[in-house]
Length: 317
Image 1 (spheres, one colour):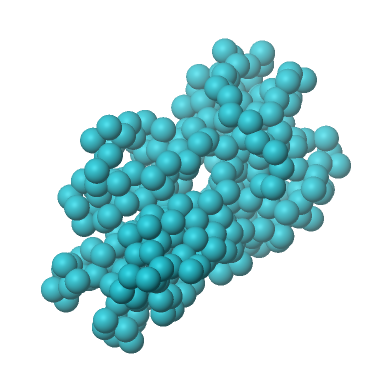
Image 2 (spheres, rainbow, N blue to C red):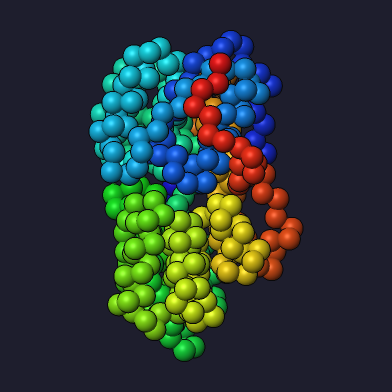
């Protein structure tokens, strides 16, 4: 993430030269964010004419399951592996084993620390957290009345969560934001809803709930039922259809987008380029921008959300 950057227009291959078999592993398919990545992976696999097998572990507590699913996928004959990692460090051994077989490994969305990765299709979640924090800090600069904020970065130990947490804290430093609590938890709706409920019990005077898209979505009906909608404002640090709806309905203030559909497309293109010995960019991430109630009318969701009728696809032949 600290390496020099350049901006460029990413142009994918027209088509793969053969029907490569690409294994894709996700932490889960429980929310619309991963559905968007799934759509990008599926649509690009079909467009390029490659095969794709998707496995999902079922949640951020299932590291061992993710590892065994990837091992099974490789044993079944995968030519390349795309991994949305449950853990920043926990998959390094399996990455090493795959690379010994000369199979490319693409790191998508979440980030891994392995130095043996072939390529990365991901943005800095530190910057995603920073963009959300910066939006808030500009509303409440130093010297203005202090506001109390509860922060929900996501599951503990995941690379993207640690980065997002660091970025958010960096951005609000020196502002009028008083961070009263940081609550970690899986990105299932029930887990996040309980964290929000507990926080509102403990801190009835908070002004903002900021966190994952699932936190933001879960907070809306809870705040409504407690008649706190006008008092407590909601902000997400990434983008889903629920967040999109929330911003359009003025229930969520804003959210940065990292264009997950594009990240899915790029990961497949990187895999094909590496397999075919073509030039490729080792680390690519779409430019980040914040969608707000003011600019949402100009925002095209095709980079960020799967089409409304899209259902998860686990196999492309």
